[in-house]
Amino acid sequence: MTRPTPPFTLGAVSQVVGAVSNERQEAERDIGSLWRGVDLSGNTVVIGLGEGLLIQALSEHALSAGGQVIALSRRMAEIESVTRRIPTPGLQFVQSRPRALPLLDGTVDLMVLSSAIRQVPTSALPAFFEEVWRVLVPGGRLRLSDVLQPSEAEYNEAWRLRNALIERLAQAIGRPTALYANLPAVAQALTQIGFENLAVSLLPGYPLTEAWLDNTEEAVLAMASRPIDPDLRQQILERDLPRLIAAFRSGDQRAAERFVLRGAKAGGLALDMEASFTEADLVDQDDN
Image (cartoon, rainbow, N blue to C red; front, side, top):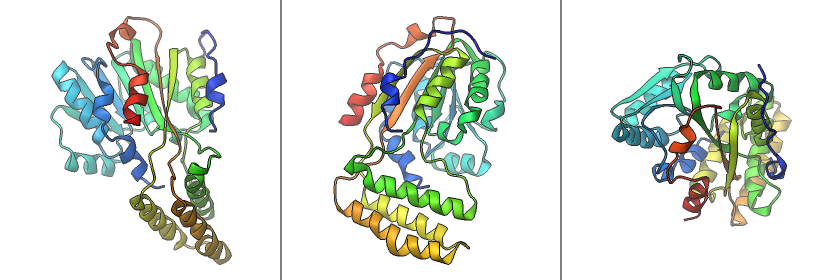
């Protein structure tokens, strides 16, 4: 189902040059302060649990505002891990596939997608956002954040090599990868569905640390230990991984940039309830 809507200008977005789990934890740091002024008095649904810091911050804000937060994950093991580490009163967890949300029509005031949209194939984006549209109230808001494809800048070299390594290994063992989101495709799909007032902010990637390098090496070695072509394994361990380490050691290496994209379902006054929060707050806070 396609609804007529004013075209969304992708000019600035299209210029953006567009698996190790610690990137989620870094992206969630101090996330609570980034949500000041956002109305959480209604029903908030979060897809993408990460380390649990985001849903903890949102649920605490919602609890004080009289709202509730529902966190969705298709993996029960992920839900159990987060609930053990971050018990939060009033937070509800539901096991579900995002393609068929177990929610009634028009019951969600705010939908948050955290590092989750990269896992949706480009061809499936319209169907996925139709489902999001279905559960949102008129005027309901969507806030989506994820990582971009790394740029050609020198400070992204280690990250680019990391992505290339994981993609080669995943292809060799027949595993899919979801390393970055296609922001222009996401914005285009939202426009086709009918979401309004789309706005995007780009956030600088976090500095890469020794812990990041250790996690990356561990992930690559674990994947390379699986049955793959011995010549490919030798290339990765003797050439590609040392190149990644050398790039990291060159200094000033950063993860790929991230983005925050927001929009709203047509109808209603929900956008007027955004109070003092702006996307500029995200950028300012991230720079501090």
